[in-house]
Structure formats: structure tokens, C-alpha cells
Length: 113
Image 1 (cartoon, rainbow, N blue to C red):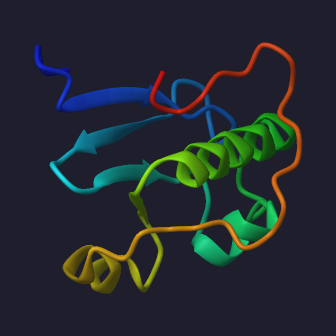
Image 2: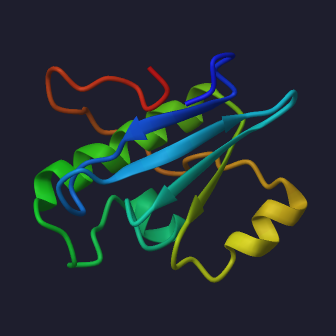
Image 3: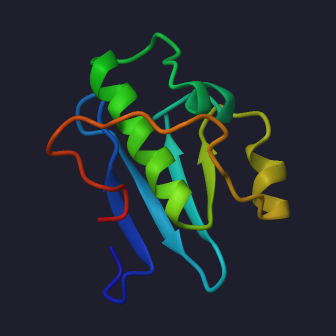
């Protein structure tokens, strides 16, 4: 979205066709504005959908891609309906997956790629 790559649109399919998020790259941390890719960090961590999506298998694959990216980069993950998003943004709380990463589908790529 920006010529210097500071703001990048990322494909986050599963919730609905064409669902995207924004990855904002700052000096010490990145911010993933993930919209409705998951309801909150707890469901993301457990790879559970909230039941409102067009393609549950793709939604879970997207969650796994987010977790993979977060395991490799300092990123604050923010979802549209997450009650703690405002606090995490204010505190720059980096997300670290607590559960082991499951495999993504062949052909999947990292969130920021």
C-alpha cells in the first residue's frame, strides 16, 4: 500500500471472500490489523473459528499463517471484535503463540509475504 512497504495489505481469507488485513511495520514492532480473521487472541491461539465464516478450513489455515508470522516477528495482533485490542495496542503487547504451530496447507505463504 505504501511504496516503502511500511503498510502492506495482506490476504486473510476464510472469514469471507476478499477479506484482507493491514500489516503496519514500525521500528521495533509490527501491527497486524486482522479484522475478522479471528474473534480474539484466545481463539487464534486455539485455532478455533467463531462460526461466522465462509470457509472454516481456510479460516483455520489463515490463523495458522498468522501464528507462524507471529512466531518469527514481533507483532501486535489486533482483531475487530477483541475487547483487549485497545489495551494491547496502547501497551504494544506482542503476540506469541502459546500452542504448537500446526501445519498450514501446501501453497500457503506467510502473512507478510
